[in-house]
Image 1 (cartoon, rainbow, N blue to C red):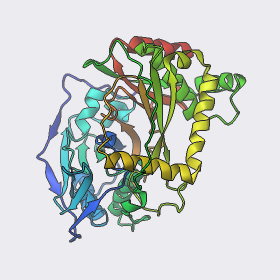
Image 2: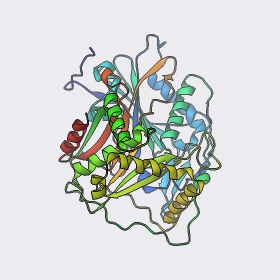
Image 3: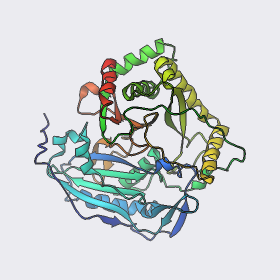
Image 4: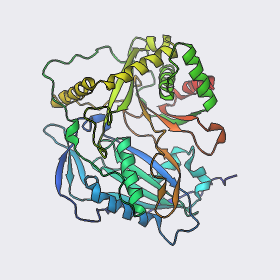
Length: 442
């Protein structure tokens, strides 16, 4: 049995922030970003924590110094990440100045063993926040924190601005650091080329649905609770069988099933009014779908957000099978290259008219992101430090309440093998109802 953390004695001592620069001279440049990068709701940091167990033989290597050097070397290839972002006053568009200012880098030391934290499996978010860079400024593309533990293991808190990269691109950057830490060549060379995803403004009027959004009596709220709920593989199997028996095709995915279930559960938890509109947002990657395909190594935002809209009453009354079928059908839109182009053109048109608002959380919107494949990065840093776990923290995208994240189940609980985690942020008053929906499913 793993030792338990004594929270009264737990502490993390942080050193001074250092700006890490490329290890070689890099181009000085001012870069534009794509239409998709310029979306105001991407003006947030996603934060992941990578956990590495102690090795028997480290040859006196300090993991913090090793990672710092790997970052220096990676910035030679990914030199824009050492620059600074800003929105221009006259048109609100993003610009990245490549001046090698450097990446904010922080080294910390925790007075406990990783085993006392179960290697961050199902960890308390308040404790986990100690292992990521605190409150980075919005002009930094990435930030890093390395935390050493008394057992010899360490964590890498990796924060990246969503304006610069999506999850796929972030994994590519992290993998590059891991490869360079082992003295290897990059398996994928980075490609900027953001002009490939710049749209053309549409001249004719764009019509949007004017149905007012559903409202919750609990919103707005400053008392937000973050919680992860885990569903076992048996529960998912049973739910899938029920949905197929209800009329969905046999190739329904876990994502589609959970999206439908969580959307309806949030409606009930937030007590959204039935006359207003609710909207489910989910992203579909474009790298291989767009014609011509994006080059391997492109690390900018390369996804479209699909939306399924229902009134609160429709969402309540429709079966999960019907909702799943709507989600599955909507996913087909991005298979049409004309649809992709028009969607990017619409985004560009809105940018050209200064119509790029940052969405405030109301509960009527549910944006889904899937982090279950976070572990698909290099499993080793340096000489033999193997990855044990990857976890994410809640992030302020779509006002956090409107964001829901699917996570892999913790390795520390064998009964959850093959299961899935659901990270939700809700007003404290709404969380008990959401929990009852989960319990009823189990």
